[in-house]
Amino acid sequence: MAILPTKDYPNIASGGTQGDASKIRVENLIGFARIPLGLAGPLTIHGEHQKNKVYAPLATVEPTLVASCSRGCKAFESSGGIHAVVLSEGMSRAPVFRFASPIDAVSFYRQVPGLEEELRCWAEDTSRFAKLEKVVPHLLGKDVHARFVYTCGDASGQNMSTIATHKACQKLLAARGTELKIIDFQLEGQMASDKKFANIHVYEPRGVQVFAWGVLSDAVCKVVLGNSAARIHGAVMIGQQGAIRAGMMGSNVNVANILAAMFIACGQDAAS
Image (cartoon, rainbow, N blue to C red; front, side, top):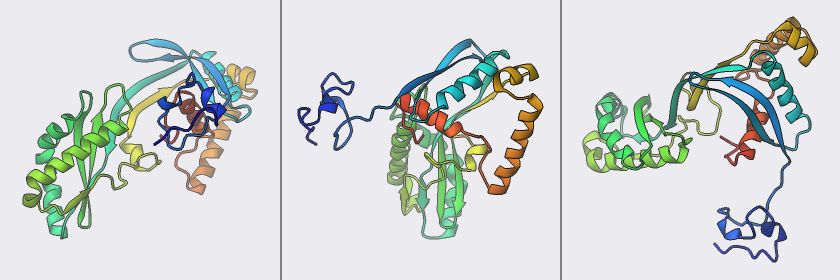
């Protein structure tokens, strides 16, 4: 793809790349969207191994988002901060193996545990960091959806797990496809629910599962949040009832826009 000339698109020349638009890997590049960047915090996080005072960069055009987030941080900071522990980690990709009949699919489903070591060798050959932790099969008609779950070092690992799983599936099809009666495979069948919130993530988290908690005193609630702890708790309970009635997945108020603002500020895929 030819890079558009910066003389015709002045935003490119002043978009943070020192005029070198060739370093931007986006198709049909015409410029940059500039988003206001605010800083929320501080907030002390008590982890299992260390304690840190952190700030959150938020890229957003939504008025009051940074202020609201900062006020929440102030309330918890005044109450000793937040405690957090990592419970599990697992980036998944869920290919689908296709068969001519349900009985062939059942046979493969039962053999998946015995194939795990071979799949692990093939998958981990693609990366120094990807480690295949488990393969969990799900039988649906004549198809077997297999959730490949990885740890990926310090990376989010969505591309890493995709590349590793693709190679493992290709190798399996080439080496044992006829024996296992695999007709074909598709790299993803939506059981990984990539970039979509799904019920499966409640009990099989995709990414890092973190358990965090903090305690707000009544005094802090009144001074910082302008209401008593009892009234705030009551509002949360009412919100949960409404969320259940509406069929919502979860009952938070505005976590999504805070996370999106943080992801954009840090150069991450906002859909993740």
